[in-house]
Structures are given as C-alpha cells and as structure tokens.
Length: 238
Image (cartoon, rainbow, N blue to C red; front, side):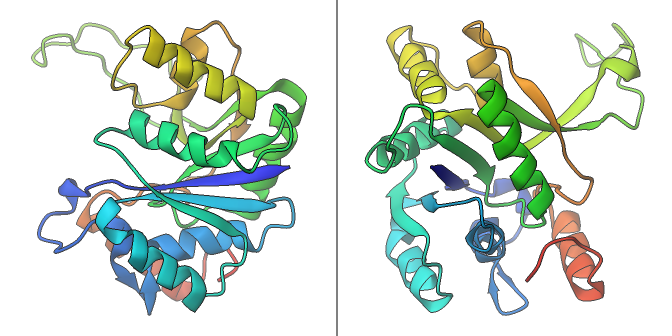
C-alpha cells in the first residue's frame, strides 16, 4: 500500500501580509493545498491520503475534501509546533491504515503544488527497492559556506551538491522507527525526514526532482506559481 502524507500545518510567516497560512490561499478558485492534494488523488499508485494541518483548519479542510471530491483522503489530523511533531502526528494516523511495515509513505509539502506524476511514481518505485528516498535537483549555482556570515569559510564542489525537495518517501517501519528513536533520545526540531533517517545509519537514495517542484514560501513564489498555472507549462494535470 502507498500512502501520501501531506503536510499543511505551516504558519507561512514568510509570505508577508497574507491573512492566512500560504497553503490555504486561493489560487484560481481553489486553496493552494488542494492543487497539491489533487496531484496525489489522480495518481494510480497512491492508495490513500492523510493530511496534517493547523488544528483550527481541520473542519475546513474536511469540507474542501468533500467539495473537491478527494476520495482517497482517509484522515485530517492536527499538526504540532514543529515539522517533526507534525510528521509524527501524521504517522500515528497513518499507522491505523497500513497493512504492512513495508507500506510506502510519501511525505510531501502542501506548499509544493507543481509536483509531477513522474516524481511521485519514481519516489514509490525507488522506495520499494531501497526503503528510503529523497527528491533532489542538482545545485545550479555555486554554494558559499560562511560560518560567521561575514567571510567565506568554504566553497564546496558543486558537482556533489543537490537541493532537497519533497516528496521524501520511506517504508513505514523505517520512518516510524526513526521518529520514535528521535523522541526517545530527545532529538528535537529535526526539519528534514531524510536527515533524521540518515542520522540513524540508514542509506537514503536519490530521486530526481524538478525546478517546477518549488516550495511556495514568499510572495514572489506565489506569483511564479500563478504564472505557471496560467500558461500551463507544468506536468501537473489540474
């Protein structure tokens, strides 16, 4: 079984003057997060969907799921005050749906609505083989490291650098065990699930992402999303 875990519990503070978190902003007649969920709803390899969202929006999200006929959604649960807690809350809901410890959990940011079907399919296929994968794109610019924010400390080899995206996809037992260990060992505020799994000695394999699979973080990102949707230059079926 393949289950998508959609993270829609962020505060969206970098969006500026928006009166609500970015994932709830209307984009051409529907909330941004619904564009994202629809990509998983139409995917033949995705069996079920669980949404993690802000507690005060749970009822509204359930209404949207009915309104937009998101029949694969099996749960809408409250997030926490960190991404790590939100993912763990989602995994607890997923646990009621899995039929095997090897079931595939596709964890994706609701604020990445231009996720392609190919990226979803590749995540599932590679995860079935290896157990843990991360979606990445090659770093196109030179990366500068500065320890004091004033002078250059290092310029890493760009050929070895990638930019991380989501989905991050894992067999259920792997990701659930990693989160349980983090709680037991008091490892707080891990902002990346691949990093968490890697920290416990599990190899994480790479899946090629896309420049269009960017995260809506700022107002400029929102304008770019609207432009791409308007001109239709995206692999996503809407």
